[in-house]
Image (cartoon, rainbow over all chains, first blue to last red):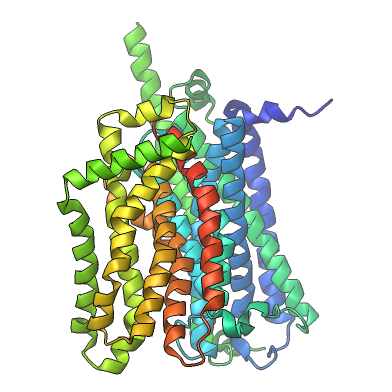
Amino acid sequence: MSFNWFKYSAPMNFYPLAGKLVPIFWLLALTLTGFGLYWGFFQTPDVLSEQKQYYRIIFVHVAASWMGMWLYAMMVFWGLVGLVFNTKLSFMMAKATSVTGAFMATIALVSGAVWGKVSWGTWWDWDPRLTMSLILLFLYIGYMALQSAIDDPRRADKASAVLALVGLAIVPVIYYSVNCPNPNECASLHQESSFKGVESNILLSMLVTALGFWMYSFAVILMRVRNVILAREINTKWVSELSDTNQ
Amino acid sequence: MSVTEFFSMGGYGYHVWGVMLLVLFIMVFEPLNLKLQRKSLLLRIKRNKKLNQRNNK
Amino acid sequence: MFKTFLMILKRDLKLALRRRSEIFTVLFFFIIVVSLFPLGVGYDEKTLQRIAPGVAWIAALLASMLALERLFLSDYADGTLEQMLLTPQPLSILVLAKMTAHWLLTGLPLVLVAPVVGILYHLEAKTVGTMMFMLLLGTPILSMIGAIGAALTLGLRGGGVLISLLILPLYIPVLVYGSGAISESTLQSGNIEPHVLLLSAFLLLSLIFSPWATASALKISLE
């Protein structure tokens, strides 16, 4: 049976599929995050390099900031697919991704600030990575503001897809300017990623938690996309029949 | 590791558990909010259906 | 193609010059914002000199943001924008002409007014010179990227605030390198060359992409 991709690009077919996938992703999310955090809290040494017990925040911080960035890229991808193929469903996916992405960016920001408070003593230190997650949050807020400002859904989708695309194009320039504001002495750009020499147990729990966050994001995004489908297809026949069977 | 030690987290209990609480709050709040949204949507669909049936009759 | 560019540019300039006061509103906004900071921060010369680059650039950002909303609004209201969409000429050229008109009306005056900032903030001539040069280089970027925001939020209620929410994060590189160069020039050993190169690279990047992005945003907004 050749898998016809476009069969599921119609909201009508995608809706039940998403319905079946949501519980699976939820199950995966809970087990993975649970295991990751359990492993992180119990199977790891009490100290990571010189930070003491509080380093456990890193599991959540790393997972959330990864998710924040990945979901922005996914949002732009779905927007692009929507612009190219003009499929309503991909715009709905982009809209559904933006909210969870914003939540993830907020978690990354708060956990980063708490980490800063403990290890550097101040709630906010204009460290390039923290500043970048703040800017990422601004981009999400801009996207959602544009989405809600435009009433006609079709124009809202396309306009925010273009905005997300422009945002993504400029993000590397912003990243460069935030990391290396003074090009004369630009040491901070080649910041070695802090994963070398990290004890394997910690790395494992970090990755597992990140995977758990991935599953959580899929689950929540699929749930929200179902709602968006219902909201937008409210006067179609299949939706009205749907309410009887109450899938 | 005794329970009290676990919660004190080397004196940084508030910080660590504060962040974990936030994550838990978001992971519970988001699906809950979506479920409520879904219920109201289904309600609206039912009302539309009734409305349409009454109009076509 | 270049003829239409000039035609649109002349038309826009003529339109704007009829209501001369509009140009001065942006200019005075810039001067007021710049002169507010010393009242807030204090008159000590050292701090003023240190914050001058950042203040000048943030005021320039906000000033260009102010004039963005009206960029397409008047044409959108009386329908000439639809005509522009229907012309055989590529829309990006027309949009580029409108961006240049916006820059000439808001960006360039800021460059000419920079010496006033120099006086208010006790800056030496060299720093003021760098500020004018960097403003000259940076303000076109503000107009071009801002035009994308203006096209996206065409005809929306609360458009002005919305544009700033959308576009200000995208201005960060201009702010960082613009003010970085000015503060760099105050040092003896200051070398502003990398800042200038990076900013002009960003200028070229936006010159190539923003007309196309604005054109597609306009097509979406006017569907």
